[in-house]
Image (cartoon, rainbow, N blue to C red; front, top):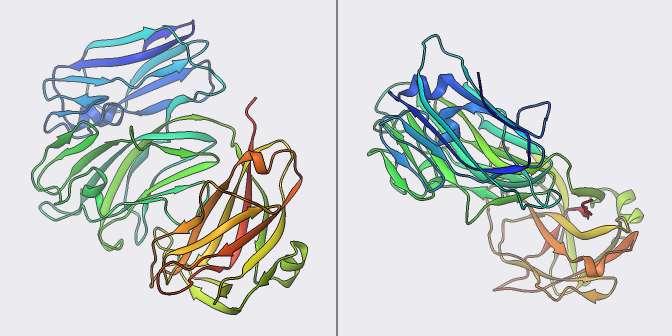
Length: 418
């Protein structure tokens, strides 16, 4: 059923719905579809429980930008810009008639730059599923933008069992180490002691449910949104180490555009002599070279990875030459290393000029899941107009020993927006 249509530029500043009765069936059976600027695929398509931030409806959950009340009132006030027009419709996927008493959209003028702005969207809704022995893949998006909210609902195999120990893992731009990893589901929405007394609500998130399960949680990533330049992946664990039968469903919300702006231009695998020679990889100072067989932490911690690791034993340097493209807006280096010993640090030079913003520094370590992907950003002032650059890394000792090491590098360049 079509609710609204607007054929001029604008920004929706609020959605407000009112139903006489709220329950899980209503919140999950009624879906909202929003299309910006005549797009073929809907930009928003999910149950209204996800769109307004509560898929169960046991208690009031009023957050700063979305909320659902037991009285039937629900709202979403994320600004959603469009430049040609918009259509909003709802669909009943259940077998029970539901009466929508009020549907209101507020539209204001659009002053956003369409090149620098993204459409408000959600990932394809992840329907209620149990994934045996693996994380639930709640959402994945390609292109570029920033994630601003997550909504996940969970059902245990029986009542009154703890179901909140699963970690949230967020992967950004293909990095194999999670950029965000929570200590359980409850920690992701900023509560530290499980879900025994819902609702727990604060301005930026919380959850509703019964004691321990089922639960439905929302987090608004307003002050700490997650920028991505090629892709973003959001997963959640089932239990402490995917050892529970849990059924998850949900989606993530983001502002985005379809095209990626971070482009891979080169890579070096130190296990390959050919790759070393092609990139003129060389080291100075005392080093040792060996093989590491281990795992990455996070979602893929059961996938074995083997690689050569060059370890620096005293201050020296490594140097290599990589391809980029002249019209870049900066370069990102991704390094694979052994993080069994922490506090890795190195100075970074590009064509002999030191990147003086900061050193490349990693404080964390993991002696069990040893593989790490970490990254360093090189400003465009040192890369723009060049087809290749020579990178020099000078390890620095932090603490009792020099822990810097290298196994592989990937090189990415930022592409100018037009």
